[in-house]
Image (cartoon, rainbow, N blue to C red; front, side, top):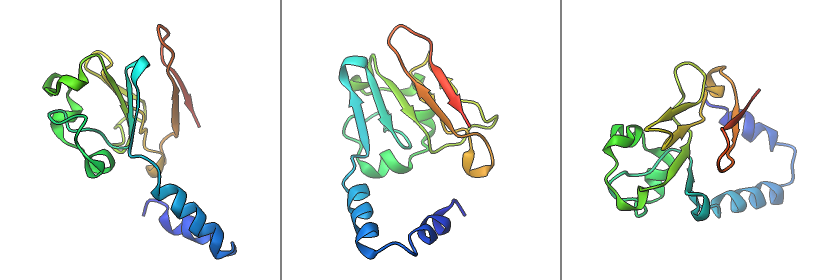
Length: 133
């Protein structure tokens, strides 16, 4: 439904070691990245706003917890002065969504459903710069 079959088909003519190497690389990736000096947290789906940074891979990859989506509900001290950039929850209008005075930035603009594919360039002291396909 979300492109998995097409991805697997793209490997059909490739030697098995290529697929194995790619799977090993993907399996070894972290589920969260923190840019401490910039105060940025990058994650696929989100974080637990009560337990951060100890929320775990399952949360990083799958959460859509209401309290995460509303930064006013964030209670974890580790989130003070942090900005969380994520995807996983497509925006309704195919535009990036900022919440809580920019504390949370969702760049999932629904490409899987025919919306735009979005990337963002974040620069300290500068406005966010969005790129769309």
